[in-house]
Image (cartoon, rainbow, N blue to C red):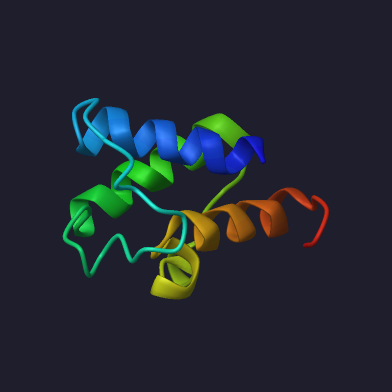
Length: 85
């Protein structure tokens, strides 16, 4: 799915400095592994809003939406009204 690829590419480029080595799995917690923190969440929000033309509300900034690539992809699909939303 293109959304997952976009998210993975963004995370690798901005948080792993282009070095993944296959470690970034779609269901791994981005918060628990320390890949992103509160500042990283804000960077993700900016990326999502710019890339997909949606607005992320404060009440949507929860781990259920932002804690893994899979959760982010599902959240974005719901926001844009895509399949499976």
